[in-house]
Image (cartoon, rainbow, N blue to C red; front, side, top):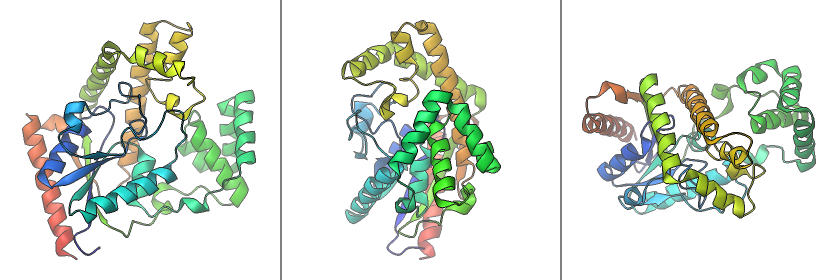
Length: 320
């Protein structure tokens, strides 16, 4: 355990569960500042599709790592780790508590564990060759290659998650090592302690919230947002445009299907993403889970979450 009561509070959960509200309430309760762990909200001009906090919500407490990148820029978990840890130290240095809010699993991993990205292979030519193979023969071809190298890794990584498939093949072919399981891969961070809160809801309620959010995005002007991004020269080739809500609108704008189909795909892909997020987060053994569907009001749920954070924080601080 770390001295000087260095604890960060992590509030996570699947998309559309309501993380923003709970992070803001935690920041108010514990004199905290929010550090985003969302791979889309980090980009400028991508407000609607990324479900960024509103201007009103942003004004309630200090937020970090939102709207800091141009959508043309590439970004990585390693870069996120550097920026987020810098923010964490700045928040600690002014006597406040960092509140990590978001649902990008690898970003959370980079803060919960002492992940050393410097040891990852960086051979650009090898990666470009794999990407070319995927374009020529399809994503399934690369997934089959991973299957031949490491069956367990292939079973854990979805064939359509091309970025992760390529990284796994890199690790296997360039280092000769296997792709380790989640629980074997990382050592817990030593710079601070983590108080981890997981939010969830009953599946039907969560899916209904997802559908409502997508409908609201369309009403708020998601299509116009994508048109504006497209006018900047952005396409599926850009990392930022591979996010759910953006990658489905682009084919619609090309006339490949109608808007109803685009909306259906966004809803479906978001539900699938929420399911994958829950699978990822449930691997965190220290997570305190709250099913928000079990509470009659948001106020009661917020109170319960705050009480739990307070109790865990006190227990951690007393051990130091």
